[in-house]
Length: 184
Image (cartoon, rainbow, N blue to C red):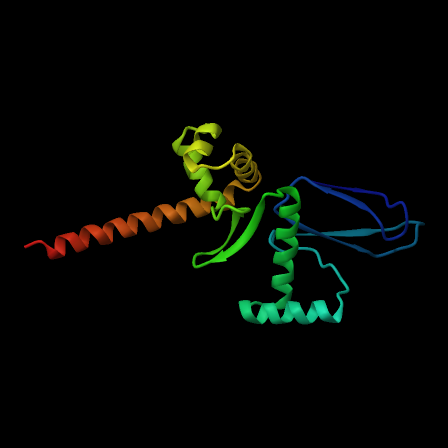
């Protein structure tokens, strides 16, 4: 359900959507304040964002383009990633993002440890933060930072944990097959 409030000025409105999985588009048929009509269109393409026009310096655009070519990404995609990660790092100052063989993931600053690794240790310690910090030989505050990030993005971290579990099972199966192959 969406609620559209009358605009304070022509072409402006407040929109409140209860379903965050839908994108909502507004277009004004009569921008005059004397009987405006708004057309509300919904789409189930939840991954689609709203356009945002930003002016960047020539130097910044050149650097973005060069980095995008190295990453084999369109500059727009890389810019979107930087904005999202920048907002997350503002909200979680002890978290940074790193590229690796498995992909880009959230890491604890200065530790070399991924957030998913911290969460796995927390689970192994029944959620006991001090015990996990002691086992990892990390300050409690860093483990708390990882837990806080996990609280904000559980699906992302759970995917990394699931991927690790799958990789571990495959490696174990390969080891068992190798052991069986070398036994007479």
